[in-house]
Length: 127
Image (cartoon, rainbow, N blue to C red; front, side, top):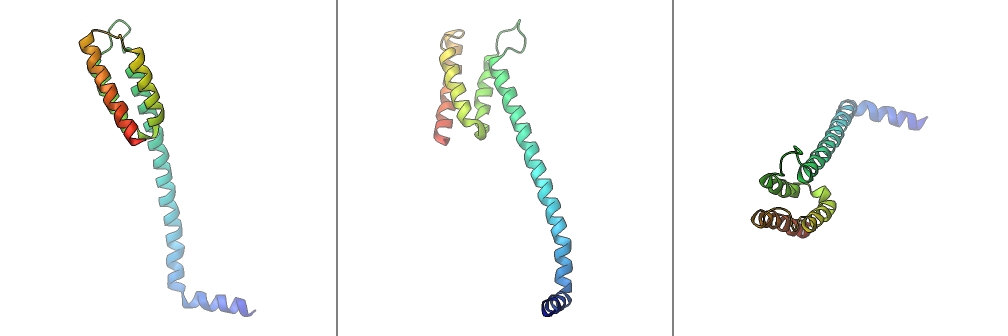
């Protein structure tokens, strides 16, 4: 009985604080839930964006048209913004560098190769 009395007295003495706690807990839970959903949404959007960039890097937009070199260079550069995929990006870029060694005219090939090298070095430094 004495424990019940102590709890009752504490609740009466701290009614204001208890009321604030009862309001803050649901509010904090709502904020936590919102942030968790937003984080998951961002992760999903980044996943889609990354895979779309990889697709645009290696596949022609129009099968009847050649690959656009400047677009490929920009995509290789943009891949540096996806740190969560650095491990696989590094393997992809190294593989593309090797398979594209004889891709297109030498002048254009060198521009793409330079960007591949820059991105590979950047990612290696970050890993």
